[in-house]
Length: 149
Image (cartoon, rainbow, N blue to C red; front, top):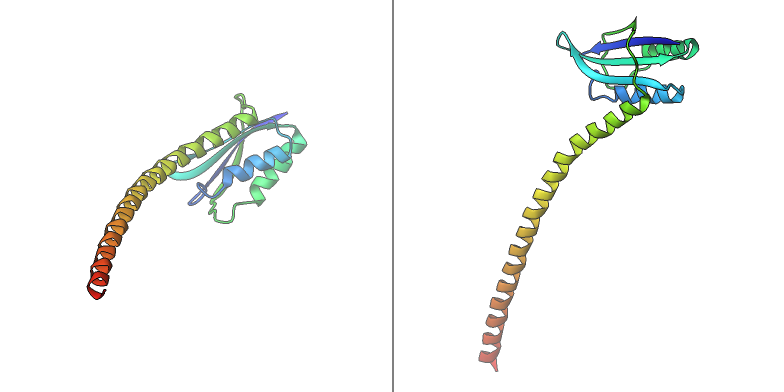
C-alpha cells in the first residue's frame, strides 16, 4: 500500500468540479481511504488530494490526475509526494461535500423565502386594488345604467 499527497495548483482549480472529478475516480477504483480539499498555497489556488491505495491503483490514479482535468480549469502544476499520516475513509470527504453544499444552499433558500414573502404581500395588495377598482367600476356602470333606464 502507498500513501501519496497530490497538489494541483493553478489560476482556476477551485469551483470547476475538480474535487468531484477526483473523488469519483477514487470511488471507481474502489479506494477506501481518500480525501481532497481546496486551499491556497502562496496565494495560488490549490486542490490537495491524499490517497491510500495499492501500487496498481495508485499508478492508475496518478496517471488520471496528470491527464484529466475539468473543462474550465487552468492548471499550472501537478505534483506528488509521499504521505505519512493517516488517510480518512472516503466517506468523510463525501460528508464534507454534502455539508459544503448545504452551506451554499441554505442562504439561497432563505433569500427565496424572503422574496416569496414579498411577492405574497404584493399579491395581497394587487388583489385589494383589483377588488377596489372593480367595485368602483361596478358603481359607475350601475349609476350610468340607472340614468339610461
